[in-house]
Length: 60
Image 1 (cartoon, helix red, strand yellow):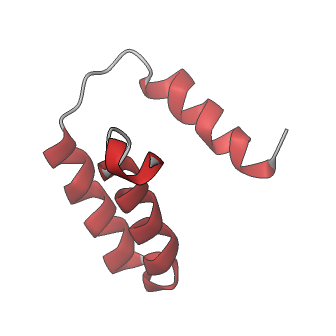
Image 2 (cartoon, helix red, strand yellow; image 1 turned 135 degrees about the vertical axis):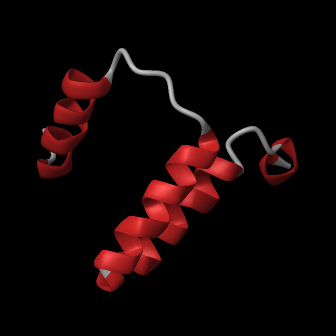
């Protein structure tokens, strides 16, 4: 188990039954980066990866 898996597991345990919108998630990510600017690049990469999950053009 990676160290980050603990945070993911806590998130799933505490909020796994909630339904959220992408708009809500985007706002929370912006807030997180505002409070923790050193994480701007990883959050940007995560957001881009999530945005492109269904992008078939990159699989060619």
